[in-house]
Amino acid sequence: MRDTSGTRTSSKRADSRSSRLSIVLALSASALLSVVGPAHAAPAKDPLPADIPDYQAALDAVKSPAVRNAVCRFLRTPVPTGVGGPVQTIPETAEPCQGLPAFTIKDPLALNEITPGFVAGTSQPLPTEAIKLTQLVSSLSATVNGRNATVVLAPTQGGGWHLAAVRDGDSDASYAAKATVGTLVFTEPQIRGWYQLKLTTVEPLNDQARQGLGGQASVSLSDYQKLVKARYADKLPGSEYDTKGYSSGYSPQHKAEDASFSAPLLAGGSGAALALVGGAVVLRRRRSRRPSTG
Image 1 (cartoon, rainbow, N blue to C red):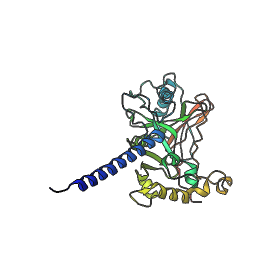
Image 2 (cartoon, rainbow, N blue to C red):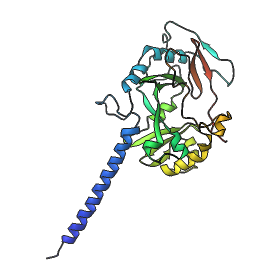
Image 3 (cartoon, helix red, strand yellow):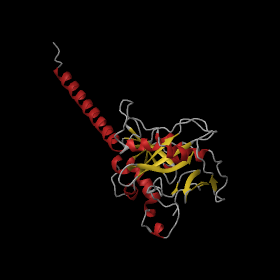
Image 4 (cartoon, rainbow, N blue to C red):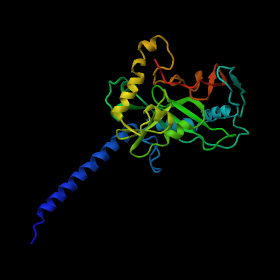
């Protein structure tokens, strides 16, 4: 009779190694999701995603009449043409949504960005240190008069979320929605690059990101850190580049983050942006953000 004990032992060892690998991968994905992503992949039976703090406050904000009215005022005003021209004042109306097609504002999604420490090379190339949640974005359920818009929420000091911007288009929310279980979507805002992080592998989601990776289909998080360090490390806040007042330097902070519903608010973003200045609502077209060249 042939002795099969050696074969059984080898098979058990292989099964054990495979099981340990599966556990490691599962734990890695779980750690990634519990800290920084995905944007909103919670099952329908779980209404509040654990990865976004004070999410109920964010839901309350996007469903509030104040935010909806801001969106309606934005949508009912023609987008200005050209850059640097006169700002268009949006007429005040008692019912800014009256006469517009019906729409709803979708639930907010996480907008993640690379961290200053990751750019400077002082943080380890780990998902929890490389990426952080900076804002929330919500798109509309339908186009309104042929236009899309994105509501941007910023964290309020002391907790909660407030309106930071209403932007033309819905690309931010579209990319943020690409996050899946086990992956994280983030942006390199200086070049408008969008990426997907799968454990420690970075993959581009748009042309700007592909250019940012030098045309590569994917790179390790460690190699990506080297790329952004080369691009921005000498342009961080406090650097000579920053203190001399050069534009387009690296800064992950958004100017509108400290605003509130009642304070003057300049809404940043691509294309047209809504601004509340001195009580008047105006619309302006912003210059496209470009990568720093030093």
